[in-house]
Length: 197
Image (tube, rainbow, N blue to C red; front, side, top):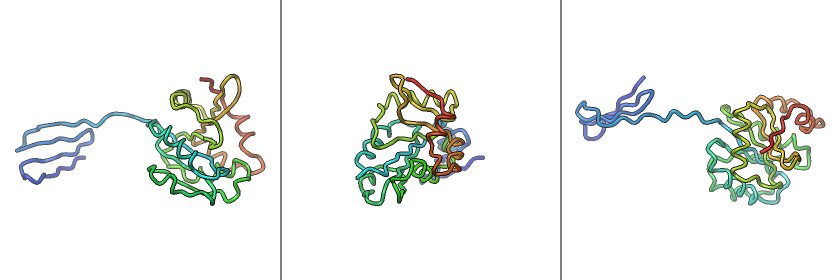
């Protein structure tokens, strides 16, 4: 399938093909721009910030990780007292409210899951009030999870489980079905794989 467009000069055309774009003049091909053949994983970043007073911390987290191309959407689960003006200058951020931020973590997580893009393969769950993992370590963590196709991955540092936690989309859909009182700790304990950097 291809589409040809005549430019204003009348003698030049741009042809959009499946594998690239051709610029021609008087029927002669001048340039051929081949599309980059890059398959980038689709990671979503879900920031749980329901117990934060404001979104300054969230903004810092997004700013740190925005340079990682595999993180292709950001979802923030906050509370009704937060001003979303803090994150308006950051593009493609979805914001939702947990009306009861003192409920178990699974309630906030389920709110975030509802906003996931259909193309998302994995979601990184970050708690806004916890230590921020350096960008290089986060990138390495995601590479391990993706290359080993892990369903639930818990970061381990100095032989201690910490955060963030990465869930495959398949695992998150199972979490949507668990009861509030079960929580996600049981799910993580039963199904997760520890990843040490």
